[in-house]
Image 1 (spheres, rainbow, N blue to C red):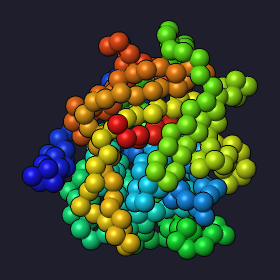
Image 2 (image 1 turned 60 degrees about the vertical axis):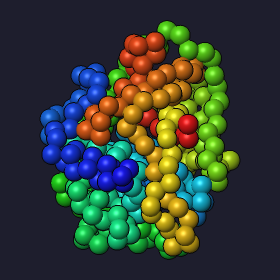
Image 3 (image 1 turned 180 degrees about the vertical axis):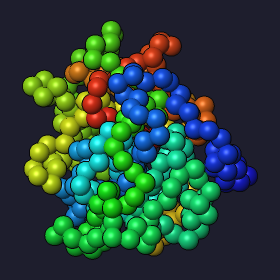
Length: 303
């Protein structure tokens, strides 16, 4: 029954107009109609350093099989020349992406039983087999960690609207009242971990993954203006990997607790997303909590 409900929800979202849950700042809204590109990114050691994710408006970190992590980089304000390594889609992605207005989802592929759900979701699916020359193998990495994407060659995507607008985020340069001083935060999955260290000089949270500093392909440290640790229900889905490991399903519709890090402070917040076509609102004591202008990293932690 729960699975039928999810499928019905995906179909319902396909028929509904996507709308943000909270109005963003005008500077984040961008021109109407600009497409958002979401790319599934490999995140094991052999895949690092990744290429192009420093240009993402939002980077989501989700749990996958074996307690490992995978990233979803969402681009709206600007597009990188190349992004990757690109990996396969998961059920978590479909509910998550419902808040964006028909985004393009770039991914390496998906198992057969998941494809009907992808087809029913309100998104433009562009797996490697249908991306033409946009996808290529390279980067000096071993397969399967060597699939990359040229977004401009994909067609139907362009820089313009900030992805944070569709996600329902608010942004403001002024530091909100409240919170507490915090300079480091670690989030652990069963077989992965993310650490964010505040750099007052850069006014950014420096990203580390699995105990190692995360850098771009050019050697620059990956950093976020705002980090969200969003506590969600993580369920066992009906899908498995080739080794028989169950695929976790992170539910991003609903409500719960979150910790928002910005400007060297931590805010105990509440997140709420009424439906899959809605953006996600973050509040403190019932008042909207604005994020710092710049890249946002969201880590889905188990409640």
